[in-house]
Image 1 (tube, protein in one colour):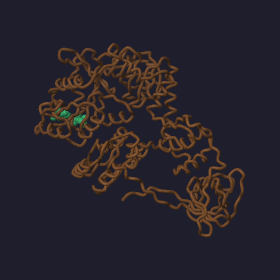
Image 2 (tube, protein in one colour; image 1 turned 45 degrees about the horizontal axis):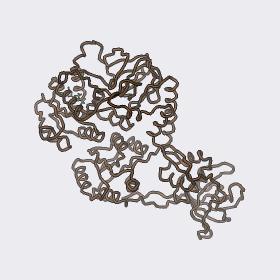
Image 3 (spheres, helix red, strand yellow; image 1 turned 180 degrees about the horizontal axis):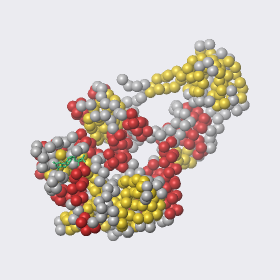
Image 4 (cartoon, rainbow, N blue to C red; image 1 turned 30 degrees about the vertical axis):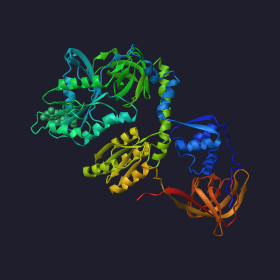
Length: 616
Ligand code: GDP
């Protein structure tokens, strides 16, 4: 048995220090492009290192590192965040450095930005209306109330007039979706709980999301006007989730309100301001070009792109050139939530902007640029990057199998879990049991969200943000959700026996949960005639006897029942003159096994792949 050598395959080698940068999700072909190598040659090299991959499959960072080391290159895999940073630095813009450089002299207090969350029908929309109506200066401008995605009110607090911004898309879906895209909009969350209904599944979901984002929570116990309202019960329930009212010695403010009867709305706003002042340092520099986030946008027949943006620092002015996601343009006009035209918008101000080339997505960042050309170029670069990212499908987050490795490399020390089950008893039992696992030193287990019901898009979004693994107990995801998880590389596991779930997690924590592979035969072909090619070596003119022969799959060769060549790859596959990816039973084809040349008439080529064995 002769081991295939690298002879004949030439790969340009680096000197050990040559740095090659690849975006996350790149494939061997992308790498080959950069070093001007033949992708098939790199597939072979990788194969000799014990890893199987096709030329176009995206590889993870570790595999690239392995391949790079072998060839004398330092491979760097670049995240989308890094890429955005780099993209902007090409235009001399460094938002982070800019923010860090700002000191007390530049910074001025800015209003808090608040999101209202809670279970359906607990009164979020009604409460947002009541808060808006409480605006002490609302009457003055007399404009027409509009829904632009956010509004600002003025409120008298401890003798001073204070502004507060509310995102008026209630619920945590938008909140999580934006966070999944790296946007942090919300400073404080109001958690609405109906006093006659108590804590419900979405209440828990909402508070989990807020806590995961480190956003302080003020609780509005709503509908206290209703018969059967029991605010104390709500307080008791929320204590179990770590929201302990001040009167019980905690630090969460609870305000009993009635959105319908306008009871204690001012007190609720006071509580938001007190919490903000106590917990957060909300300041921004107003004296510079604006930076912020798009929170809503649509295409209007008459006015074109209409985008609501939240200014986070700097001042946005009519006439500025801006770029928001992949949209760019000059600010033609700005309006506030009362339809009043504005010339400038300060930090924390939501404002509707006209003049963009197209519609940004919620959560896209925006910034003001020196000129229109820069804005357009940034937009175009982002568009190109988006397109590439779409191609690089599987972004691997964390999976139970690679957990120990991520720990070993110092990348993480916590295994984040999201638990979903069919009944709450099971979820609780599972969580209890999981938290009892002896996790060992330096590693933690954290359940960042638990809930009853199917796995939702939201769960996947949360898993994406916090690199969590989703555990489904007697529940399955909807089809679209499974697709999303696949696209985002989120590991989902399904169990119907609590102990199997616990076993797997325990093994993962101990670094022992390795995937098991099994060999699956794909096809066999009989060699009829051997052709010699100076370029490709010997080509086996064959007929496919069973299954399908595919290019880039593993192969072995037998002669009269004896193995004569193993660990081979179908490197070229032709039907007559054409390169093909697969050939089926009873068809003739030419098979090239790279540099392996020991082929004779009558040999059998067997191809197979390694598949991950499902766990039972
Ligand atoms: P959302 O789904 O959380 O946005 O809830 P809504 O704001 O749409 O309110 C749901 C229902 O509860 C509506 O019929 C509201 O009129 C009612 N509601 C909201 N707040 C109160 C309240 O303080 N008291 C009473 N009695 N009903 C309320």
